[in-house]
Length: 488
Image 1 (tube, rainbow, N blue to C red):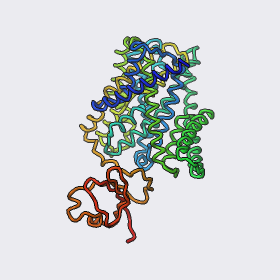
Image 2 (spheres, one colour):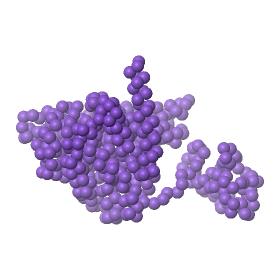
Image 3 (cartoon, rainbow, N blue to C red):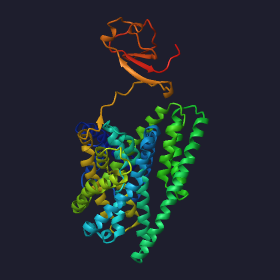
Image 4 (cartoon, rainbow, N blue to C red):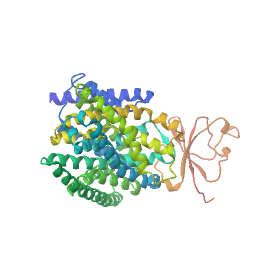
């Protein structure tokens, strides 16, 4: 009992300080996830002395957290916004990952192989290290884009979110396959390559099964959510969360890619299902995502040991800079060759959004858990590269986007006072009444609103008022306005 109470006390203190440093870091443009990692490291064995070195438990907790983060990312994915960039996103998350893996693996083997321990002696070991880092981390990308409210031109926001949400499953699959090859093939290099050839078929099966399970369960969930009438709207959030876990488990049971399946289920539910109080459901997952990010990044920080990372830091920096400046840009420009209308500046920014984070660090645990020789050094290298990526790319993303003239200020978010209104009814806008609005008269009727515009609600301080033509308005009143077709 005392141990449980102490663990809860320590966890609450870490979370409290994590939220504080998130607030402070936002002022300086530092990614929250980088700060969470550093806080975990400061509290770890080389810092305050909180020792945590259970890779098996960390892998289980991390996979659980990644499942929820990826599912929540799928819920935020709009088919309407991503449809124009669907082919670009899919190419980046498949061909882009493979090219990044091949280029980085070859570089590690030729230049840095002798400096990364036992795994560097074989090409497959170098490719495994590259595969672990081949994807853009979904947690980091979603956090940076949404946390900094970065709005990008040329439809780059949806493209980057689609890529980061769909390339984690590809990197995960490559990591698992290569780990299994190295763990089971001890006879000869020829035997390893023979197993690697068979892994291609395994990869195809995993993708096909993941897509099939995701599609089937996604539309099955849509039907169920629309037919089941729950007494409490909060239960919809819990039901949807259980569907995510079911999709992941069912796909894995059928030898498919569970992460791909649950991401596809989330996209279908978000865009196709008619769920009561959908915004409240999404807010639930937004809060849950923050909790999982806090949990995972603090845990990974505790797991890291700066004293063990120091010897591999130089080679990690060398590999990380190669990925940022050579492998990632090359994979992006090659993958996007068919899309001539996408500007050079846009491709340059996509190249820079190769953020690493919890995903690669989590994937780096699988070789450790599998007992691959030299995997401890691999974990420390990946951790260093993730820190470098969050520091250089995460902190500079907004300035780079502005320098390339690819970011813009978005209209303020519409305040709907908690009302759930179907999009087909029209666009919602909120307007703050000014002195100039009242020059022609003090009532709502005197404002002479254009045809097709209706004031649905007035907020005055903490009060919500039902509008009518003779209502006297005051400066700073908030009007909820609907803009749409009218029959009068």
